[in-house]
Length: 182
Image 1 (tube, rainbow, N blue to C red):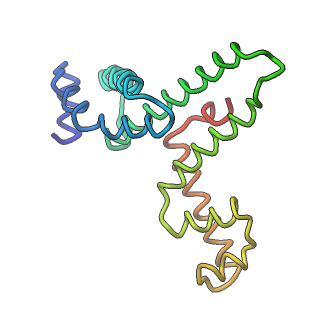
Image 2: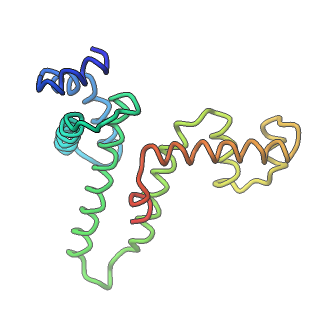
């Protein structure tokens, strides 16, 4: 079934469209949740919540889908799971005596890094390498140019700017400012 057909069916109240979406997208969501410290049961709950949200949104008259349905569902599940992890962290923190609390800022920083890595993975190979070398390996522009066979440091700098701009667009498309600032 194509995305347009699924949207039409949902707008008509045809629940077989949800069954189709579940069957064709569940494994992707299961991998996402399990890979990020979740269980199969949690993946089922998150995906069902995402499908309900999707169903409700599609049925709104002003809803416009700007990506593939699978991309939309993945993003919703990612956001729901991040919120769930934050909630779990807060609950766990309450159970631990105050003097043994771990640094929550460190945990939040790690979560933000995971978000960034997810978005960076969506970039092309050259952009991934440039941003990796610059931000994580802290190489100079000249070192990056040499390593990637670019003409000079200015070429590397220009390419880094374009890659950073592309990364910003990916982040804006998949995450809200709240996800990154909470």
